[in-house]
Each structure stands twice: as structure tokens, then as C-alpha cells.
Amino acid sequence: MAERRNTIQLDAIKSAITTAGRPLSIEEILLESSKKVSTISLRTVYRVIRKLEEEGEVTAVTLPSQPDRYEPSEVADRHHHHFLCTSCDRLFDVDGCPGRLKSLLPDGFVLTEHELTLKGLCAACT
Amino acid sequence: MAERRNTIQLDAIKSAITTAGRPLSIEEILLESSKKVSTISLRTVYRVIRKLEEEGEVTAVTLPSQPDRYEPSEVADRHHHHFLCTSCDRLFDVDGCPGRLKSLLPDGFVLTEHELTLKGLCAACT
DNA sequence: CTAGTTGCAAAGCATTTGCCTGTGG
DNA sequence: CCACAGGCAAATGCTTTGCAACTAG
Image (cartoon, rainbow over all chains, first blue to last red; front, side, top):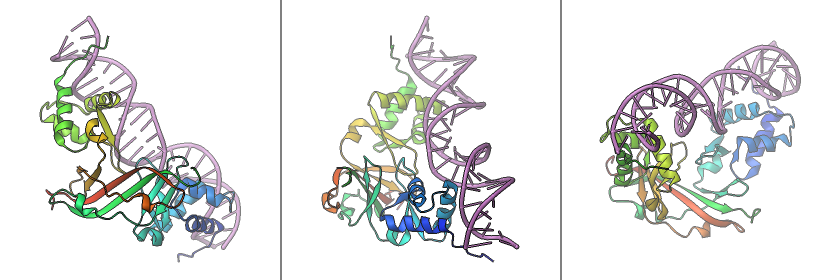
């Protein structure tokens, strides 16, 4: 049944996400895919992203007081952190990890995950 | 003009925040101060916390998908990070800092702040 | 022939506030 | 006597969706 159609909107959205090299917000995805399909709507971006998310193709990145951003799951699955530019509000991936985290813990605490968000100015905003 | 009254509610809230030793959510503050003033209302917690925040006595801690939590500004001003227990949902302060963060940055990026959130199980939930 | 798209209006949703009546510092 | 507390109901501020009519794979 589930006949799968390959629409230009789906294409534009997928391409936006994989090309960006950083997690994009719904608005950013809308903006970016508009360049290919000028009439694309916010509604469609939401619908497609939800579907890609369910299918496990994209993963959400959540920051405080910020809308979720999305990146390809294969990128998200590689352990990494993020850099938020406080000027242009764009989020970037940062490879590597400071390590030595367990030594920060109080006694009796067990560490299972951690999130590091760096903030400052990106190269374009410096 | 601003006649200042020292109510038992204000007392209970201040005491809850300073005694906890960790950032408390509005709900947690309500719960904790209820032990001293059983009739205290959510409305009052909000009103008092806002005032203390404006006066710079308490500082908000914001996490993704979590209500804000509050701690005394003197604690917040000492650079530290947080540990979120994924079982009891309580947030703890963690002293120290992994360092070596600048080396993670791409070229041309300028680092001004960073936030580290550790997650796992607290001593009580292990 | 239908999955997919649009566009807008409306629905979440969780936190925060307004208001108005009491009350206690 | 007036700043503050209490109790709801309602606003707020987003992000997300429902719907019904179109469009295109």
C-alpha cells in the first residue's frame, strides 16, 4: 500500500539537512529548502521531518529555550557536542570530547551521558 | 514607600533555596516550603521567586525540556556545572570543569561560555 | 487515482500571570 | 493600613497540528 512518492519537497528537505553540516531548526530547514522549492510550506517541513524522524533518518537536538534542531542520524550517532553562535544563533557540530568527566562527580553518582554546549562567536560572526 | 514585610512564606522560600544545595524547580520550591507553611500557594512561589530574581538574589538554571530551576546567585556565580539524575529528576551542582575546551573549536571560532550537563544516577537512586 | 502539499486557523502545552478578596506585619 | 498571600481562571508564547481544497507522482 504505502506507495512512496518522491516529491521535490522531500528532496529539498533531505538535501538541506545533509548538506548543512550542522543541525538545522525547522525554520532554517524551511528557509534552506525554499531555495529549491520556493512554495514549500512550514506545514510540509513539519510533516516530512516527523516522518524522517520516525524512520530514524534524522535526530533532534534539543537546547534550552531554543526550538529543536535536526541532523542526520548518522551524524547524531557519532558522539559529539555543539557550538551555539550567540550572534547568528546557528548551531554547529563540534567533534571531540573533553574527557575526565567522571572525576567531577560526587561520590556514589553514576555517569551515563553528558552534554556539552559551547557558546561564542562562529567564524562568520567574528 | 516600598515597605518591606518579612512574611513566613518569604522565609520558607528563601530557606528552601539556600538549604537545598542544588537548584530547585518552582514545584520543588513549593513542595519544600510547604513543609514549613502548609498553605503556601504556587502563585506566591512565583511572585517571590520573580522578586528575588529581579533583586539578584537567585539565578535561574535552564535545561532543555525542563522547567527552570533556581539557586542562590552566590552559588550560581561560582563557575560550575550540573548533574541531572535521570531517575528522580533532581538536579545537582558539580564543581570543577573539564578544561581543554578551546582545543575542540573549529578555526576562527571564539569561545565565551560553555555549559556541561552530566546525566546518570544520583547517589540516592543507584 | 491517491499520496502529498498548501495555507491558515486553531490546538496543544506547560509555564506564568491577572484579578480580586482576604489577612497579617 | 497596605503589602502580601491565596485561588483560580485565563493569558502567554511558542511550537505543532487539523482540515479541506488543491496538485502532482
